[in-house]
Length: 145
Image (cartoon, rainbow, N blue to C red; front, side):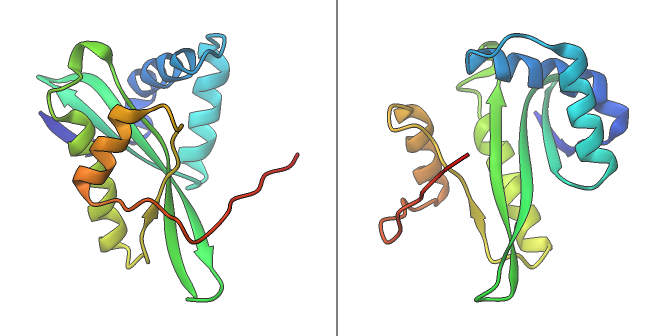
C-alpha cells in the first residue's frame, strides 16, 4: 500500500476513481465533466487530493478543501470526499488516506480537519472515530440554495 499526493500526472486514474465515487452516490457517470472538475481544482490549488495505490494500481482517494476560521484566524481543511474501490475495502486504505489528510493538515499548521457523513453510514463513522474524529454536538449546521 502506498499513499501519495495527487498531481495532474495522476489525473486519468484519479478521474476514474472520482467517477466511481459519484456513481456510488447515485450520480450519473460523467467522466469528461469529472476530469475537468478535478483538473480545475488541482490547477487552481483549490483542493488537495491523496491517492491510495495497491501494487501500483489506484484504489482510493481523499479530497480536501481549504476553509478558514475568522475567530481563530487559522486555516482548516474539509475532508469532502473519501472513496475506496470495493475490491480494496477492509485493507486499510481508508485509514491510510485519512491519516495522510490529518498529517497534511498538521504540516500546513491547520486548526483541524472536519467532515460530514450520512447518519446511516455506520461503517464510515466507526472508521472516523477510530482515527480520532469526534462527533460535533455543540453546533447545528444549516443549508440553503
